[in-house]
Length: 607
Image 1: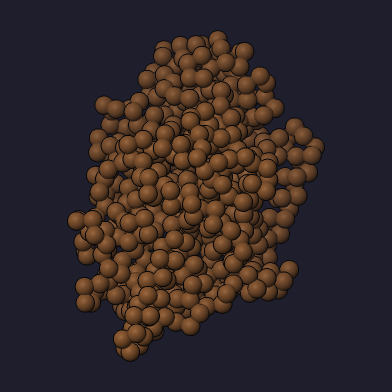
Image 2 (image 1 turned 135 degrees about the vertical axis):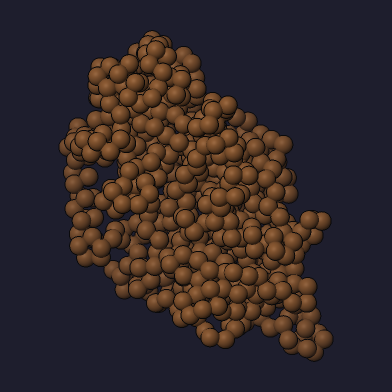
């Protein structure tokens, strides 16, 4: 299905969804399967939103995918864990809805759509906290061949360039990545990597992009295929400029497309799923302490995520209060210089866990357990740099560690590091003191920090921060390194440093809504006809990050719940109209009972 053309006159439908990430598409697909006529409007020229850049992991306690894989869990333990993790921001009603309907959502999508999941071995990020578990709550979108999208393959947002290798994606699991780290030391891994590269190069020759996608790109593609199979038009390059109200309710939108300003009338409401505000400069400055004190912020989220949902809702009485202790999912990032244009943003998802790599401030001191989650390390980084204009840390390692694991955008041996030294991405020194001078770190303090760290590291012990003492610390480390997969001394030079600054994976603060997703006004009452899902809606995690997939898990769950709520209200409106003999509030004829038959047909054609 090619890019739909926008009609010249107002298009009438049941539901307008603004945004095509996981929040928007899960809502659209569920609503269509409930019999509603749905239209998706996407500001960018591609669909998939932040989801297409993500790891594609969903945190869903009690899901059947993990249960079939042998994971043991209980709703009570999950609720206890969330109550501990969210603290004063614990919202019992929303958490209960998530725990009750998350597993139901997974079953629904697996049964009715092209969206499929596989289990992972991810531990909770704080597995030793009350109710935490070592495995079983995180699932992953199954890999996907995007040729099944047909011509719409071109409209799928590509993965984030900085975390691919010549455009090739890596699965969000250690099982895939370990072969790339061991390619020069293991014949099995070398053959695995050679096969992956050969297959990817063939894809580039045939299709000019990788077609075997994983992680969030697979989730976005599967959701989009499900929508297209149901006949849901996804209008890309179409920015919503205004909410339309009539008779006291939101009844549609005006959007700017290739053919000018177009109106869409929505019988049963408008759903905002615009991706939060990571690139809304004004709201970012108001929300982020490190920006208010003069620092910078570099989000790898799509540049189109400029807070449109919040601004649109505010025009009809909605609000985006800044109330969470951490208003975003913090992600330490490094800036990759480019010959043309702004630097690329590299999110540090893996290197911090590896043995022989430590993180220090400009003062040359460690400040946290580097093997905690990106959000925890980011929060610690912000605290460690209080009182300073710049919020930054440096990763430090020796030559052998760099060759074995790489560092940020710098890949493991045998790939060259020279270009990254020349463009300033990496700093290098023959001694720790020389490295510190070149990187702008206190040389005396850094030398002392390395000496102190090495005393315990020789025996695999982090005497300062207990690195490697939890299953999550160890999960992304090096399981073959003994005795502690996260800890090794910093050995012989030369030495390397890489500067990290603050970024995010998406915002946590968002529009106030009911559990069902109705946008609330200043008095706490629903604004008729207006809903929010995804990162436009305030996170139920209250600015905390308990585990892998705590963004996408609730996003799909509440997209599913919001769509079902809208569909039920539509049925009630139809019944009332019929009882009054008016017949002026129709619900469209039922959509296909399942998108799976059409999905199977696409799969067979692609095969």
